[in-house]
Every structure is written in C-alpha cells, then in structure tokens.
Image 1 (spheres, rainbow, N blue to C red):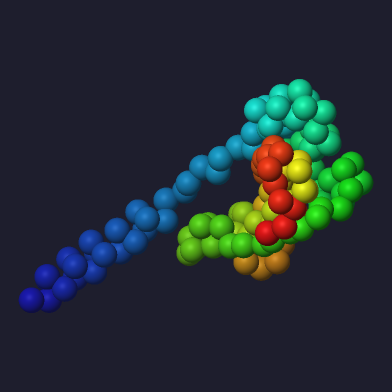
Image 2 (tube, rainbow, N blue to C red; image 1 turned 180 degrees about the vertical axis):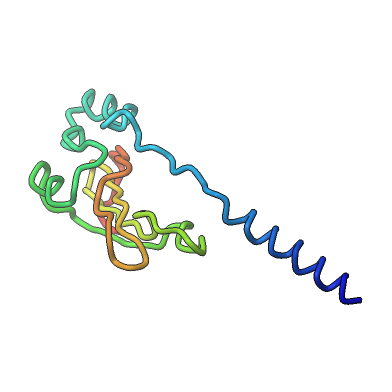
Length: 129
C-alpha cells in the first residue's frame, strides 16, 4: 500500500514538472506593417496606411488623430494560468469610414502593452463600438 502511494506521488510530481517545461515565446512579426491592410489602405488613400505594427497609442494618435470610438476587452490569453505576456487585454480604436486599429493592452498586472497588433481596413466602419 505504501509503495503504491509513493509511486503515485512520484508519477504526479513527474507530470506536474513535465507541464512546467520551458515553452518558446513566439517572436515578434518580422514585418512592421500589416501587409494586406497596408496595400488596401494605400490603394484607397486611407489614413490608416500610416499605422504600423508596434506603434504606441500616442504615436497612432499623433499620426492619424483621435478615434471616433473605442472598446476594450479581455483576450483569450487572460485565462492562461501563468501567462505574463502583454496581450491579456485588447483595445480597438474605431475610425468612422476607415476601419479599426487593435492594440495589445497589457497583462494582468497592468504592465506592458499599448502597441498596435492589427490594422483592419473597413470603409463600412460605423465609428462606434
């Protein structure tokens, strides 16, 4: 009986430690622009063509002005138990008749984030959330 308990504890510890194995972090995109969005924006003369991946909120506001609407929401990464990346929350800035700019907006401790992760060109954007 005692041998079975010790064996169970050893197997359990091995499973727990195996689950904590090092995971590689995905690298940041090599391109600093959203290619499809940039080509569509450039073709239509959309001001969102000035926005590139990695820009901060202040840089976007300086480049194309204030949004006509915005919303913030939790990403699916909020539910990963030991995720310390900067993509737990996201904020989308809506520009009427132009599209959206999506930001990674930090982690559960309030750090990091506030950088562009996606530019969505959408001429039918109503400008509100």
